[in-house]
Length: 106
Image 1: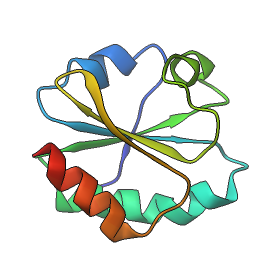
Image 2 (image 1 turned 30 degrees about the vertical axis):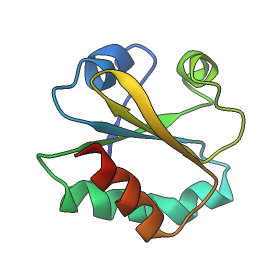
Image 3 (image 1 turned 135 degrees about the vertical axis):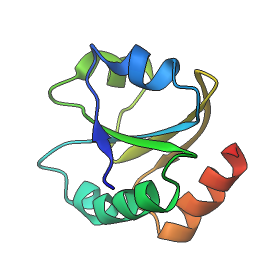
């Protein structure tokens, strides 16, 4: 199970209207720290399958959503619950940081 890809066009349906909490990884191809957290996001996607949805949004290809949520540096991971932003992590962090934030959504 890997994180799904979302776009500006699919964001509302895939994230804001999701019946379960959603974790959005805002990233870009050229971003080194984004590559560091990518395997962690994919691991969590597998571990929380069915309970929390994990998605990735490429900020270069989808600038509207990044601007809307004030993403100025990447990676930025935003945690959504019931269509609203519940928490945010900026920069590459270790897996326990993400686990703590995800568990807080449940």
